[in-house]
Image (tube, rainbow, N blue to C red; front, side):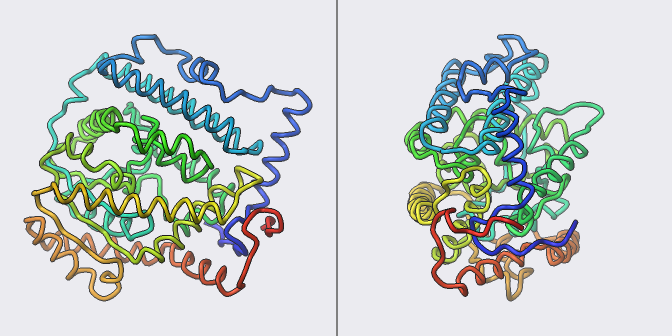
Length: 413
């Protein structure tokens, strides 16, 4: 991987992203290809090409089918009326929504042929719960490293439809390569690898939960809709995908370590699907969480809209952190299963002692094999570039008062 370029401002964008945006806009302007409308019927037609109508319904309950359709409508309206996308952002939104519709149909077709996959019995999962940027990835990968546990590969999260031969690692590698060209700071925010254990955020986004989309676009009405709508249909789909993935990977007997910050908002819905789950709560100072979250969201927003506003991002994620904190505590007050809590800074002193305590709280034996695997994971993590993110945030602060919108930001890298 090439060296990470300087990031002079949270809303900085790469030269590649700027050029791509201009080229796409020019293509549309000259009529070489039409600009695809973010219209539900158009997107549905494109996303469902090659599938049958029954693939949408498949084994899903009618309310799950209706929920997905309703979410497409709300998301498209919010994108059109609120997001102020540039050409690159519009293209990425088109691609992500049609991909969600396509995966929805592909999974439905799979389950029509093999419905037993969606009900595969699995071991009680271990759920890492916490705010975005609270050390959940570090905790997730350490627990998943234990050979007695399982984790979700990034390529499986990105494409949950199993196939033989399995080309997903290669396809995901290409997708990551393009993402790194668009956003060269991607791995400082979250270290990726095609077959590396990663969060299941794409499984939620393919059911059109807001989690992926709100971290990229300004879509307040869709976020409000998502926060106030029953998440049960999303987590029923999530459970079907997880059980299918466990069957395909042959690890259904191993406890899957699950992690997406969005679980914090809908923990009761997740636990309805997995009532025997064990929970690990990751905690970090809220101001540190806020600064890191703002940096991450700004980095993903900057190249998709010419009107990204740092003050608005900060206000929204301060609200979001408070909401998730309240929902976590409300859910845990009703939870009587195995529970462990860990603070972000604890890992800086003795991560092995922290993990041993977590295992004790979860009533799990800590084996020598787990110790060896976790030391290997720690060594791998020490080589990641995510440590640069703290330096970026410190650099933003050291430069003092900076522009809050993209007018006046340094864009070229």
